[in-house]
Length: 263
Length: 272
Image (cartoon, rainbow over all chains, first blue to last red; front, side, top):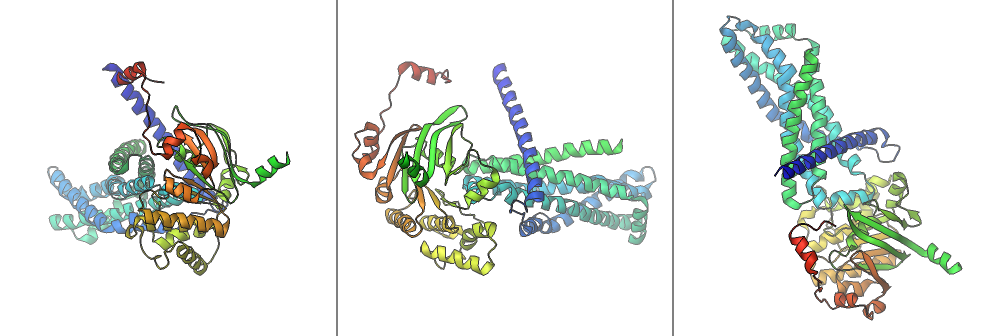
C-alpha cells in the first residue's frame, strides 16, 4: 500500500518535472522561431497569427462583454450592500475600480480563455497528433512549434491583455449602470470619479497578469495536446486536463502575483 | 573496391548497424540495409516486427540509440536541424491514414510544402498542386475538405502532397491498409507510375503480400527487430527460411511458452 503510494507519488513528480521542462523548452523554441525563423527561411506567418487572434480574441468578445458587464454589476450590488452598513456607499466606485482592473478582469479573462481557447488548442493538437498530422508537418520540414505554437503564443500575448482591457471598460460600465440606478449618481459623475481614483498602475497590474496567464494557457494546452497517445479518449482526457491545469496555475499565479505586487 | 564505391554512390538510403530502443525495450537490433537510387524497396514483416519503427527512424522522427542512417549521402543521425530541413525538401511521405490536415482543403494540403519551401507565386502553386492531383486521378477535387473524401481518395491526395516537390525519396507507410482490393491495386499502379516518371527511390512498409509482389524490386523481411533477409521478389518467395515461409503462407505464429517465464509473467515478477 505504502509502496504503491510512493511509486505513484514518484511517477507524478517525475511527470510534473518532465512537463515543466517540456513547457520551458516549448517557450524557448517558440521564441526562437519568432526571432530567428526568418533566418532559417521558416518565418512565422502573420496570417496564422491573425487566425488565432480572431479565434482567441475577436470571437470571444460577445461572451467577454456579457461576463464583464455582469461582474461589474455584481461588484456594485455587493459593494453597495456591504458599504451601506458603514454609510459609505459612495466609496463603491473605488472598490469596483480597483477590484475590476487589478483582479477580476485578468482572472475572469484568463479562466474564460483557458476554457474556450485552451481546450480548443489541446483538442486540436491532440487530434493532429493521433492522425499523424504532427509527424506529417515534421517530414514536410515544417517545425510544429513554429507552425502551431508560436502563432498561438503571439496571439495569446496580444489578445489576453486586449480582452482584459476591454473587460475593464465593460465591467466598470456595468458597475456604473447599477450604481447610478441605486445611488442616483449620474454615469458621468461615476466615470469622473473612477478616473480620479484609478492609477495607471492599477490597469497595468492587470495587464501584466494577463501576459503571464497567456503563457500559462498556451504552454499547458500544447504540452497536453502533444502528449496525446491513446486515441479519441486520450484527446478528451488531454483537453480536460489542460483546462483544469490552466485554471489551477492561473489562480495560483494570480495569488503569487498579487502578493508580490502588494508588498 | 570500385564496385563497393559504385554501390555507395548508387545507394540513396543506407542504414548501418541501426539499434533503437523504446524505453528500455530494444526494437531494432543492428539493422543494415541499402536502397539503391530508383529502386522500390518493400519492408515487410508481421505486427511488432519493427518495420514501422524502421520507417520512422528513416524519416528522422526519432533519435537512434546507435548506428547511422544516410539519406542521399547525408547521415541524418549527425546533421544539423537546418541541413535536415533542406534534406526534407527531397523527401515525400504518405502516412498510413493519409495525415491530411483536416482544417485545410485538399488543394491547400497539396500546396502546403510549396508554400513553406518555395517563393513561387500563388498561381504557379495552384497549377502545380492541380497537376499533382491529376497525376493521382483527383483532378477537380482541390476544393473539397479531407472529411469529404473516401479512404482511397485520402491516400491518393496524401500521395499528391508527398510528390508535389518532386522528391528524390518517397516513403509509404501501409499504403493499402484499409483499402478495398481495387483501390489498393490502383495505388500500387500509381507508385509504379511515379517511379517510372520521376525515377524516385521508394520505400514501402506493408504487410500486404499482393501489393508487395506487384511493386517491389527488392524486399526486406524484418522479424522481431532483426532482418531475416533482403532479396528480390523471387529470392524471398523461394526462401526456405521457416519464418519467411510462414509469413508468405499466412500461417499463425507458433509461440513457444516457457513454463517458468510464463509463471513469472503472470505473477508480475518478469521485469527484464
